[in-house]
Length: 443
Image 1 (tube, helix red, strand yellow):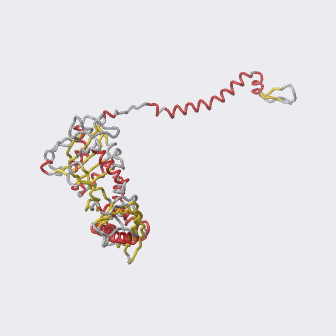
Image 2: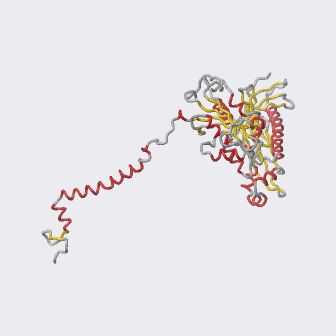
Image 3: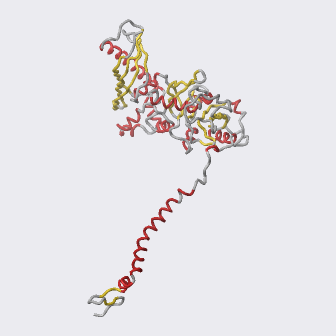
């Protein structure tokens, strides 16, 4: 049998290819081919690794040192009267009679490099004292918030940054106006964190930028700490600016914000909830009603203490430790109906004004019944007031939407429809208090 092209006899009856014969005659060439075959995947892996690492190893070509940034920690926004508006600087526009006559005043707290403490320390100087204060307070005016922030940049050398903005305080006059422009600017700004606190102030919001609390050198950080600790201790619900925007866009819920006030210049009081309807602030609650709101929502942990008068035991003080709420929704006679069962666990802190000792379970139950009756009246009054103001801060509409979608689709076509229907919604509230501990001393 003749060999085919590229074959040769191997000395026996078989035939072998020329390439195989070449590898037998030249083992070094064979080993080199295997070595090239093994090195090829390694080379590809190395090239792939270099390609992936190139963007990481390219360096900070657009870096800006922190000392060269104007870090804004807090903002306050107030309305400006017509007389004060005439004194505004024309930075972003030439004087034009067609511009709005109403202006806003924006006060910014800017961190001073090297003076902001990294940990707890002694109180600082007056925020207005440029030599000792860790912040620089700058006030500007503008037609809008965007205009005011551009005017602010005109007065500071370094580029302003809002990535560390944690507190925004607006005056009640601003909150009762149209917040559409303000929310639009803050929402579109990628530097604004959704965990920033938005507060409504009693009086001028700029006064909060000049507080000098002895517990914290940076006023904005003190306000931030106060709000965060109020949440953890059960004194206030977690209500960041992102939560406010989410509630404002829902058809079945209205938004609310913390309502704060200054006391003795450096003391900040959480005075209630500022609640909204139609994008505007319509009313505010009392401080004790914050606890009632959290009880109806079942927000834990508890933290509010309640002082009330009992029928037989005199005046007592209870401290709420835990809250739990069971909610049900129905459609009765073509209208929504909601039932709330609120369960509270508390300690009896004080008892005075009566010679009758609290020394039996029957007397504790007497206190519990009086508490349930009085707190239920507070919750019922709060619900009725929000219904009168067409502001569903409890999110009852969202419950109707999720549990009764057919009814919702038939009757609700926008947020105004539910806010109008909420005013006639029937709400039943039942209270149950259980006093677990008696740690008190008769007075």
